[in-house]
Structure formats: structure tokens, C-alpha cells
Image (cartoon, rainbow, N blue to C red):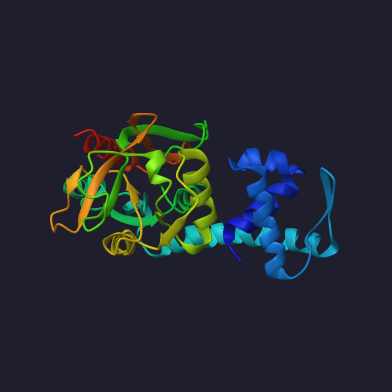
Length: 295
């Protein structure tokens, strides 16, 4: 059972509507329906009785809703008390970063921040777009770096960092090595490798296929390192941002720009944090991060 599934279920009941809950959570209605269905399947019983566009709680659903809502409130209190008891207070700055981003900007920002704020510890968590978004929404991170996939929300500070061109890492032993560019049309004939956890494969595949325009054949790896090993074995291409075209230092990989409609495919990376977050070091870290992305 995933924590976000419980959050989604409570939001649907509070809103009285799948559509309104999806808007409040900034996800699609089909996605929130799938998550609640997965929750019901794991529990082994229905929580909602669906009647066209409306629904009602089953007795089990009513019990789960009341208990889960209290539990989440207690969990938030426990989390805050734990931080206070640990003696860290505001000395921890929690940052989320895309697990599939290959640039070095985070390293630069953390190093510069450590020089200016040695008393504050940076904790970094990596994940997919949706995992980072959930970290931010449910207060598991103070700031996340993410590619923009949704309209900006007034509930967050949305700071654009930079557009980054997409390059495909391919095997130096394969037929794509040495290419000056790779069109999306050509990329569709080759398996696309995604850096994603098992639970996020569906989200990532849908985004890369439906929104970006890659093909329908995908492989997945839990880390960037594992994904690059698949590339080295000539299993597919790995779309990445934050790298430069040409051969890798060890000569095992070739990086080729990806074109969409004869123009470089690129994605906008942003820093996001909750508008009500009062962490005293948040603005400084965001400034250092922006400076690193614009070098």
C-alpha cells in the first residue's frame, strides 16, 4: 500500500468527486481512479460503490476513510516531532532530484551551499517525476528539481532553471554510434530505456510515448548506472538531459542529439517548493541551483 494512494482516496472522499480530486492533486482522473482501484485490490475489498459519475462509501470504505484521515494527521505530527527531537530543526534541507538526470548542477549547488551554510545538512532523494511531485505535495521534501509536465500552480513557487536538450546515449558498438543527430521517427524503431522504479513504469512509459513521441517498446532500470549498462550492451537508447554530444570518456557510449520536427528536443527543468515553506535556507539554495544551471 502506497502512502499517496491513501492521500488520493481521502481527497476523493473530501471532494466528493474524482474530477475535482484529480484537479486538486494535479493528476488525471484516470490516474487517480487507477490508484484507488489498486488500493482496493491490495485491501481485497471495495471502498467505493461507483454509480456512473457519482459514488458512495461502502461500510469498509467509511471505516477506512475515518481511520486513515486520523492516521495521516498523526503521521504528520510524528514526523515533525521526530525532527525536533533529533535536534536538527531547520538545519536539514531536503532536496528531491530526478534520478534520470545526468548533469552535474546539483553537485555544484550543494558544494557552494556547503561553503556558505556549513551548519545546514542537505538530504537528497531521487525519483521519477511523479515520485518527486508526491514528495513535494506531502511535505517529504523542501525543494524538488523536476521537468515541467503540468501547468504551474499558485500553491508552489515555480522557478524555471533552464531548458536542456535531450540526447540519446547509444552503444559505441551499435549502428547509431557516430551519428550527428537522431530523429524521433528513427528513435521509435529502437527500444527506449527509462530510469524508473517498478511502480512508476506506467507513468513514465505513457509520458515518453504519448507526450514526447517515442516508440512503444521500452526497457526500464532502477538507476542511471543500471540504465547505462543496458546501453553498453546495445539493448536500446537512453534519453538524457545534462550531457554533451559525442563519445563518453571511456569510449563505450555515444551521445547524439534528438530532433523533433527537425528541431532539438528539449525539456524545461524547474525548481519547485511549497509557497508556505518558511525554511530560512531555501531561497539561497534555489539561487545557487539556478546559477549552476545557467553556467
